[in-house]
Image (cartoon, rainbow, N blue to C red):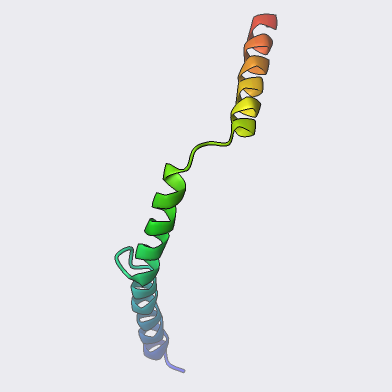
Length: 65
């Protein structure tokens, strides 16, 4: 295979990859739709409790230093 063919093949794959990952393409629109639904869901209370415990542990460790 010549160098020209290798470079041509790489360019062809790059353009195909760009089409596959187009944010306005089918996959991009579906991912955005999925993300929008998740973004509006409330944070579970047990996760908020864990985050509060982490904040409290950080505050205590800073006071001890």
